[in-house]
Length: 119
Image (tube, rainbow, N blue to C red; front, top):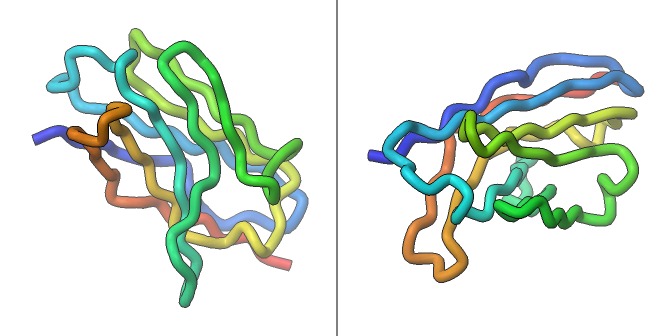
């Protein structure tokens, strides 16, 4: 019954920027306890990690996006963000929001939002 809703995807040219958002449902009582993350899935490829952020603000990024993407969260609003700058065609994928507790007992996914970067 927990829902994650992504928004902000779209079509941009190389070098442009997009800001993705993910809003968690109110059923999540302790948003702080969840490690939030962004994953992406390009056509014909496996889903891969983009970035994660703990409730306390500790972040991790895949090497290919370091220096270009910034993940953040607003705990009172139960919202996750991904600021994407200097976008490349290789960033084209469906981006998914993820919420999980460290034990993995609770693990939720959003429906995904399409990001397309043209050259």
